[in-house]
Picture 1: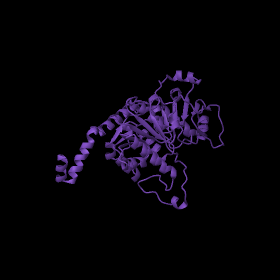
Picture 2: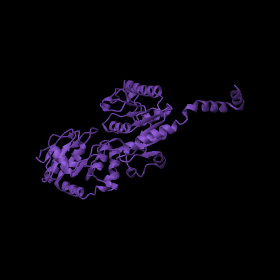
Picture 3: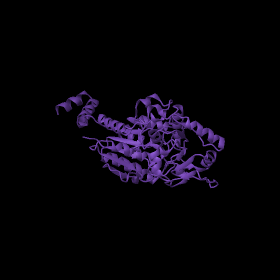
Picture 4: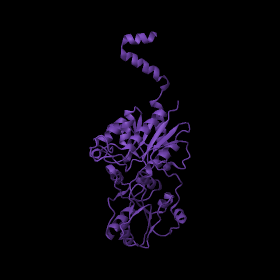
Length: 392
C-alpha cells in the first residue's frame, strides 16, 4: 500500500505554499497527497492531483473573555490562547483528516504546535526547518516529536549553534528555489523588460510576507548614485515624506521575478528562503536586508550568508550618501560564486524523494503489523497468555 502524505501549509506569505507545490510536483503520481491550509487559493492552478482541506483562519480570532485571555502560555507552546473556537475547529479538522486518510507522514510547514499534536495523535511527522533562534522549549519539543526534519537549504547555511541531535535527523535538500524558468542573459532580460542596456541597474525586491521595501532609503540611494537606475518590485513601505527621483522607478507586483534578477547588476532583498535561492540561482551580487521575523529567522540567515561571503548583511539601509556609495562599492566587489553554490536545481526532487522514502521505511511491512502487534500484546500479558493465544 502506498501511504498518503499530508502537508500543513501556513498561509502567511507565499513561500510555504510555493515550496510545498514544488515538492509535491516532484513526487510520484501514485502517491496520494493532501494539503491542509487556511488559504486554499494558494494552490489555485496547481496541476498535480491533490486534495485540499480548508482550515479556519485563526489569525485575529477573538478570545471570548478577558479571564481566558489573561492565562499565560506554557513554555512548550507559542500561540495557543484559550477558548478560541477557530483553534478547536482547526485541530479537529486536521486530526479527522489524518485519521480518515490514514496518513503515513504529516509534513508541517510550519508550526511547532502541530508537530507536537501529531506526536500526541500517533502520526509520524516531519517539520520544515527554518533559520532563527529556535532553542526555546516549544521548538525543542517539536523537533523531538518529529521522525525527521527537512531543511530546504544547503548544509553550508546551517547555524553553528544548532544542536547535533537535531542536525542528525535533518535532511538538507540543497537550496530549493521554486522558480524553474530558464535564466536569460542580462541583455535579453533587459530587452524583455524595456530597461536600458547601458546603465547600472540596482533591483530592490520584497515578497508578500512583510511590510515591503523601505522606500525612503532608496531615495537617498538614487541621489547618491545618479548614474544608476534603481528598480523596485513587490510592495513598498512609504513614510509619506519621500522625494521621488527620475532614476528610482517602481514596477509593483510582477510574475517574472527571474527576468528582473537577471537584468540587475546588484540586488537588494530580504532573506526569505525563496528570495535567497532565486538570487543564488541567477547569480547576482546580493545586499541582504533581513526583515523582522519571529525568532530572528531572517537575521540568522543573513548572518550565515555573510559568514560564507555569499552576500552583504546590512541590518538597515544607509541613510546618507556616503553610506550608499560605500555599500554599492562593496556589492560590486562581491564574487557570486559562493552564493551560486547555495542553489541546487535538484532540491525539490531531493525533498520529494526523501519524504517518500521516509514514509515507505516507516510503514514497511505494515500489512503484517497487526499480527506483530498481537504478539507484542500477548508477550506483555505473560507466558501463559502467549501459550493460550498460540493454541487458540
